[in-house]
Structures are given as C-alpha cells and as structure tokens.
Length: 131
Image (cartoon, rainbow, N blue to C red; front, side, top):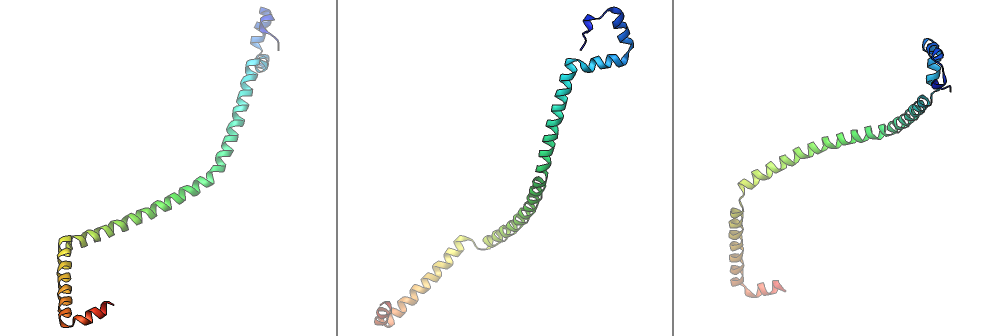
C-alpha cells in the first residue's frame, strides 16, 4: 500500500479528484482490512448463533405447548378442588364436631346398656362368647 505521506501535493490533489483511486487506497488500508475481517468474523458468529437458535426452536415450541396444556389441566384441577372444598365446607357447617361427639356418646351409652342387659340375662353366655 502506498503511503499518503510519501506523495507530493500535486499527487494528493490528483488523488482527490480520482475517486476510484481514493476508494482503492481506502480499501487497501490496514484499518479497513481489519474492520472487514472483524465484520466477517461477526457475521460468521451471528450465523452460527442463528443456526443454534433454530435447533432450539422445535424443543422450545414443544415445551411451550406442553406447558400450556399443563396449565389448562391445572386450572381444571383448581376448579375441581374449589368445588370439593365448597362441598366440604357445606358439609362441615351442617355437622359440627360437638354434635357428632354427642351422637357418638349417646350411641356408646346405648351399646353399654344393651351389653349390661345381656350380661344380666345370662352371664355364662357372655363368658363363653368371649372365649
């Protein structure tokens, strides 16, 4: 590459009027060649990254579709769970624990009285039944 410093003023003026020669010198300059090499390397890197991204596209779309399906399933399960909870709350409101305990105690008392009654009728039969 010719150096512009080595040229005379007349040569530089002629060069200024000759756009083809100016362009040739610019393209041959070390800085422009480095920039072109960097540009080509960046383009190659970008192309490689774009190809890698395309490889991920199908699994990503499949995963996105699966996620959507599972989210819809989750919404349905959430609705069912809310319905079951509403039923449980309704049932729990009608059956309070104290009322259930009282009913169990009454039934237990009845069974105990029946047991005592049968024991008084024939204590030996109760003894045989236990063996």
